[in-house]
Image: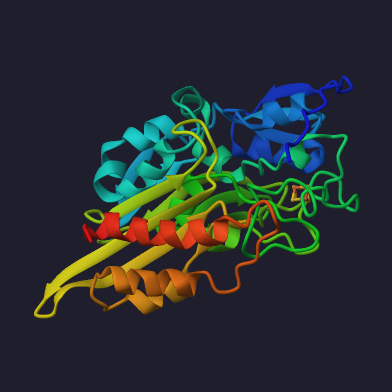
Length: 343
Ligand code: SF4
């Protein structure tokens, strides 16, 4: 079954454009106009506006805010919200201390898009469910209460974990999967001041409100990302399985970060962080599989047991049944690559 072509008959919607001089100005714009949206790279928002999926009355450009630094201090790497994905992925400190993040970002989109897309924007990018983009189709995320076209429709790219009857969409970002595996947090500022949101609490599951992608207050501005030091840099892998080698969203992706040690029993996993993309409305942390692997020998048998455990509770919707097999195979493959185990 093929999904039919998107209808592009979109009504003209005029909007105003303004440049914020500072965070306070951006917060003020968001506070006084519920239909205002921030824009930085615009690689997702502008598409959504062209398709008529989003229709902000006012775009507030935050490119001139000074959130463009990458620095390391007191065991934490911080990356400003307006740093582009290309710049962050090629940064020496990111490559040295958090190579998983670089690997994931380079797996995303295309070089042209990565040159424009920002760290903050990538956190907020919206699902690529085709029914969300087609304004002639029902979609609870775009228009709450209209139904979910994908539930009984063409759902090949859709979720196998954490979905609801209201929405089975997935988060499309590669970067977000790595950030979850790295225990990052999101720095924001808003009318009530500054706060850090752990990345695991930033994105939401759909529940009854799939229109909400995250826990950000509408008036808050993302200022940066914080990633704590770890001992994973020698054993990280971001495996992305997709329909073509570039410029395609993940069917399944797996972020693996391992700390290995040599013991009298052989090569052992001292610490492990695992997350999957393409499977849920938010990046999906594999906590049970991590617990199983911690302290165990790095063997294919243990990797298979961890993958089996990770798949508990998975549910497919027809066109995406193949993910139930592809996902555990991908977990095992990514663990083999990160650990260097050949067999
Ligand atoms: Fe809309 Fe979510 Fe259903 Fe897609 S899966 S049609 S985004 S409600």
